[in-house]
Image (cartoon, rainbow, N blue to C red; front, side, top):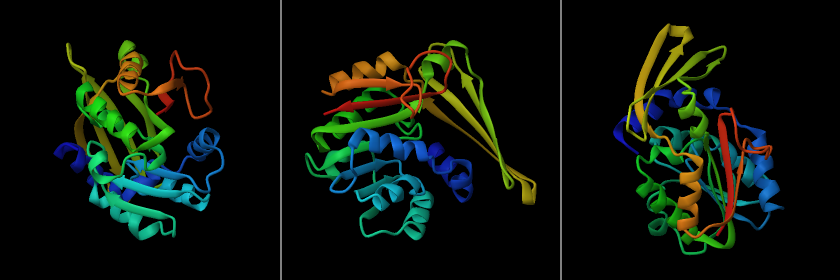
Length: 246
């Protein structure tokens, strides 16, 4: 994680669970792909405050959640406790160093986490690491944004998140001849009338490039969806959800 990305997540960490609350459709999607959770061993990359990881553990899976941001990770450690649940600091580029070969039934990478890597070379490194720590036939499940749509329009702003306590505004800044997009955010904290602004770079990873990288890493049965309901991918929708097998 670049310094700017770490600063960004620290700056919103207090309000992270309000900005990005638990999405039950994520849990349903994982269950649909894995079947019964008991006896499953799952790695959750970019676990943040641990909302999904905790739900998976409640369902019977053995779960390890990793994140690079200490502020988010500490919230997970303090607030999400379960005998089948472990949180630790971890880098998605160092999976083979931190975990055993063929250790997991599933590796999850949700929340647009993957595109915090700023090159396809690094994405491939992560995917190869994920394949190495998956059991044969184990599943890699990914959720990012649909950069085919975002770049073609272009989509210069994401929907505003407005709650009782905060307003979260997100803009994209595009540069010619670059696969990186400037991601600019303004977090308005209503009670104290304060705005926290940040900007970081994200990789505009398009679907066919991702498919090619997954194939190069050795994954099979690659499926792209428009959302966690598994509706057909393609067109003007923001999510890109992926499932594939090692």
